[in-house]
Length: 429
Ligand SMILES: *[C@@H]1O[C@H](CO)[C@@H](O)[C@H](O)[C@H]1NC(C)=O
Ligand SMILES: *[C@@H]1O[C@H](CO)[C@@H](O)[C@H](O)[C@H]1NC(C)=O
Image 1 (cartoon, rainbow, N blue to C red):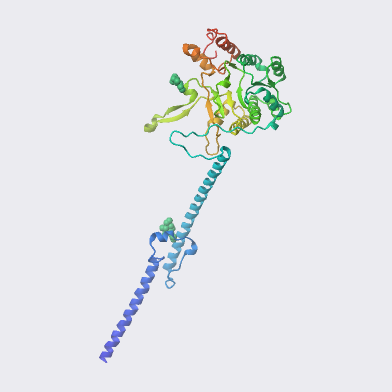
Image 2: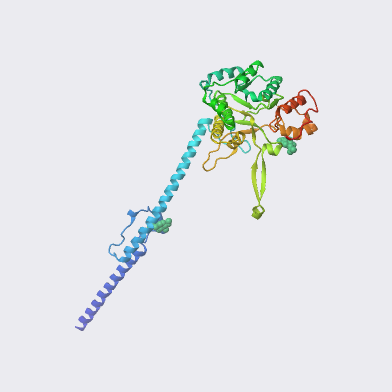
């Protein structure tokens, strides 16, 4: 019995050991399920890379539905929905990137449509971006009468165009006399009243008056100053649509050479400048000083004196027409805006949030050849070397006594009267 009793004891202890082992096994299982819900073999990155979603919650050990396990599931759920919202954000970002790429593709495709074939970039130092836009297809239906006139007047699809009303009759006379003197035939006066039509006809000057029923003429007659300066840009549009390059000219300008022999024709807009030396005319880095910024006290700024909107050459391109439309639109909407300021802002301000800048190529004309009256009266007439140069034009834009100064310019450069400019002050009095 003792043996039996010992054997019984032994059997009992074996059973209890088995029971303990089972308990240990179950507890270990629960612990493993708790700490490694995704199994022991998966490495951490593999856990990360599995698809995430609520449906992926697995009940790893159905035998351990303790409140702890439920808590654990809850926290996993929270973490998953957290990850879900992170994922949603990532998807949003990706969609946005995709959109940008597609826009870029669209843009690139449009470019190809406009420019034709794609090119490989050449070797260092040989690449040049396209700056000469293609011209528009001429559309005669826009204004058949003007198309007819331009066919007769233009040379090589180019001409000088000036707007005039009877207020500027005297300067207009000096203007067209100087043009005739240098033998230019491709020019046209847009008469804003009947007096100028007759005045031009009697002087054998090519003249054009718009049909009175056109809506934009009403703007010219009844509108304020800003509306009239907007008119210039609207009228120009038709010339470009008809396929002509226009050298737009104010009438306070004296022609001393044929400007068509001095153009580059590589840009949408090629303009004379209000600048008076290399820096102001062609652009410079203007350093703005803020001493309180210490190390970063110098802020660099880009500056250029404005293009003169009274003398510019504009090619018949989409960019040019867009420029005219933008300027005319702003002048029509904004009371008291100055056409020259608007013209320059549209040409030079870059795209930025909420604004798409114009993509037009521009060139500044040589400020000694296409001379403004500040350059003439402040610099050139006092410099023996510069005095000997003959400009292409002189624009009396900086002075109010235009007629007197224009006549003096003619005397100085045409008649050779060396002291013709001497009596005038540098600026206005
Ligand atoms: C949620 O994402 C983080 C990393 O972004 C990861 O460490 C965690 O395991 C994820 N949670 C779940 C429940 O998948
Ligand atoms: C202005 O620039 C021209 C060439 O672009 C140069 O020949 C001339 O010397 C410059 N003038 C001054 C005053 O720097």
